[in-house]
Image 1 (cartoon, rainbow, N blue to C red):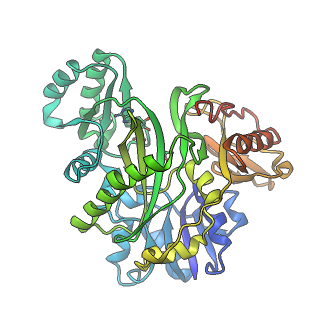
Image 2: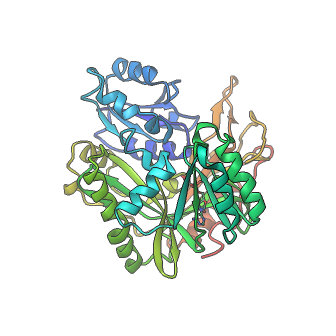
Length: 423
Ligand code: AMP
Ligand code: GLY
């Protein structure tokens, strides 16, 4: 069947790589895709948030399955747009409904959900726009660091961790007074959790679930986890500190109650659930849900997922995931992200990328890249390329990624040379 994959990142390039290997995938379309996804399918110049544009492409290209990579179209209700439309209703769609996507799209919704289904998480309080003074007073009395979260999607910038109570008070006020627009109409103030983080990915058809390879990502721009957060600078799979005992706890205390909550609330959820977890005193706590796969975790996870991805997607869409057996590669995987100079602040685009043909023994997944008029591949975003590799150990996998990263050059190219440093 023909498939339309929505998104433009290295996550989507990695998904396209796996999907295109399947005999069940006839034609693959990626909207909008990047210079790398062309290798595995046809890019369509459509914004995934342009629902009518997506519909036109589905009908015109005889698409039978849509897989949504990023969260924004889901939070805006793309899945509902499909189920409400006579011409689209029968199309398989991977991604939750608008209501279910609130698990990512509204932090207060997610916290209330975790509380209701007994899922371990940080203690919190929620404030609305008419409780500014109350919020400021409450924040002023908290021990530092103080965790503030704008309720809605804020392009990855909506979480603040502050060491100064006065600054936290100012920020709490600024969020409720509209610093992040609508996303800040509610504020969640959370207990700070100190521990090591990891990402668990679950695929569900709404009834059954399967756990995909686990990963750890590195969010900060600077070596040693310093500096501002980015979209992700690297990842490894499998994080060695996540043992079978911890995974059992995650499954029993987080995944199963999440699925029970989804069923109890009758949420329409066929797709990926990304649990962002932290270990505190040996116990897993859920920091957040995302209603999609992680980036740059997917790049490592797709290397290790040996299933026919299309088959898994079909089982998810058809409610047959209970029959699926997840096959995980014994090898480890590591991803190093190459970014534009200046990112996550201002950076330049249009820099010529060279050396891609010299890469040997790694998969290069594109993100911010495009084909220039003269046919060369140029930078087109902050995160430009992900270099993903296998190894017998994660250290070996990292070595391979770093070796190949050195073969690639573009003006201003930057990457962290210490992915995995803490393990
Ligand atoms: P998010 O933007 O929602 O992905 O969150 C960004 C990051 O903030 C998380 O990955 C954690 O590193 C950190 N974080 C969020 N909540 C907490 C918390 N309660 N305690 C400590 N760190 C947190
Ligand atoms: N790697 C974290 C995320 O995708 O949100």
